[in-house]
Length: 314
Length: 271
Image (cartoon, rainbow over all chains, first blue to last red; front, side):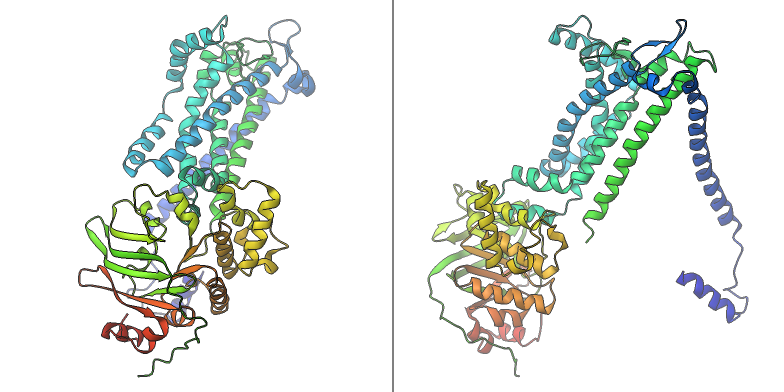
């Protein structure tokens, strides 16, 4: 604001056009326009996706009322008449997410605490990038690992008919959401001012007490955000759950049953769906629900992170 | 030159009972020697001030007494630091127990981002007091001792970060008192506070000195003159290692310094 006013003042005095006259910088304008365009495009595409989801998905509710759609336990898209109840998928997603969270949160936070509070700088500087690299692991590879390595283990450990279950999928998802949980939690812990640790030590608290009673509570909002981001990843992950969750259509009562989470239902069904048909619409509606779910998780995480940032600025 | 420092008429003369002491103490950060051959006795139930120019190792020296320097990698200590005649750098000394006996108040008020109550209860909780009633008693007693009770008794559940700077620092003192220490170390406790808050802390220090042994590092010579019974003047040598130049009763050190360097410093010729 001030800068601009100064420019006007300079104009007003009418400086000789020597060095100070305003210049028309074409390159600058071009880059500015390019950035606007790119940003605008991203927003347009995002809005387009939402519009598409709504347009293709919502019409199912004219055929199947929302009540039946959400709480129906039968998904028979090709029988006559077809029924579209997504309860089995929804519960499956719930189970897989719960398993993934129950495993990844304690491990992830403990690992973050180790990296931030205990590990020597050298260890942290090597381990953290490696962990973050794991986030880029192709999910189909994770699915393959789950299929070949984990599912036989789960099968024998729980004495199941098949090792392909929500539990197996949940464990794989836990590994896949660990990198983001560790990385974001570690950032949150490192943002805790050192004064708090000093005060805690000076009061005679041990290292463990300091981590547990001072650092983690102080970083709690950041850690919460990390968990949310991890959960968001678990909800949205498709390929791995498609490969290892088992794909059963019944409402799963236990995580050790084979099941089909929402993402897997879309991925496996969309190939057979007639474009614009009822099944097609139903799958889009599932997509819309997933979108709303992950969006709200991410929004909450974002808000929480924002609060964390402000927390220590007194 | 008249140095014009307000010297309080000291109440009781220092009893002379030694509470803590250092003997031929040197400290190194890696290859750099930060303190050289310091021998000094800290009397019981009195305020000992450590003064000197920036970087002369005052804070490092203070942190010897509760072994806070241990947290920094590469620190090496030579010589003895004693609490009641026991070398606290002995291998079988439990640092947790030591820090219970020797509390510390920091330069910048650093209450935890918790409620006022939880801040004060933090130490007792860590040391095994879980009973709610008992904790309430300790918190009240400590806050009263720190002259903060009347101001916060209605907001014990509120965030400590909402208090003013001076209140936060008194809260930090209450937090230390709740652990029931014997010695309290203060590292420039008023440097982040306004003059009124500073005076309140100084009054508090004086009243605490009746029951506690206090060591304070301060930049502010008037403060040292106002509150302390004993003063130690530190300086840097050529190689930037801190040395103890002069140590004695505050009144003497400020009015009749024996060392030329002390005189130069307190009259403001350098530092």
